[in-house]
Length: 82
Image (cartoon, rainbow, N blue to C red; front, side, top):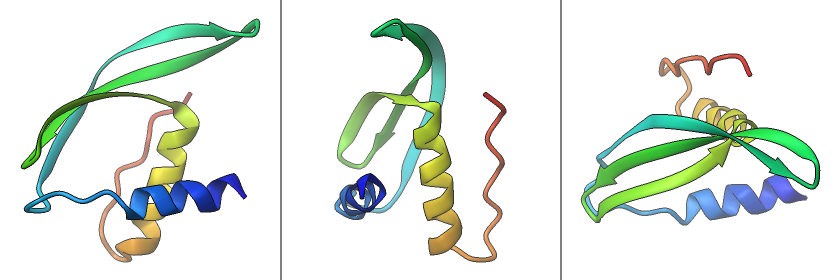
């Protein structure tokens, strides 16, 4: 049930005015237990302040699925290939 837990955490995210700006500023290749993966550095800001987070590709797939389900009919841009 890892997906259910991720959905709960996303539901808990709040901003003061609902406006948010963010962009992927760079990516880096990381090794973990001998396996390589790409981590994306995301920088942004909202009414609560600035933030910097690191996310993996699979997390982008999850957020896109959530946006599709929450905002039917809204254009959600495709994510680039791995």
